[in-house]
Length: 81
Image 1: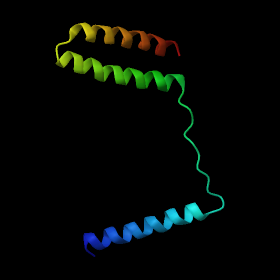
Image 2: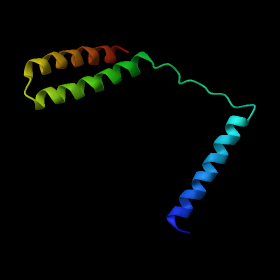
Image 3: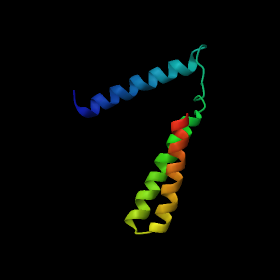
């Protein structure tokens, strides 16, 4: 079986599964559970670390220092959780 044939079969199988799911009476679209405070803080720390890295690379050290202070504060909050 060629890759093209295999891709075709895989697509047909996936389409059939999705169609059965959507036509099923038991199918429910559920939303993602809300993020916890800890998860939100971790995500924010990750975002800030990316910014910190960018500021350091572009030699914007004043901005980097501000971001580092924010990261430190959030890490202290995380330790308390």
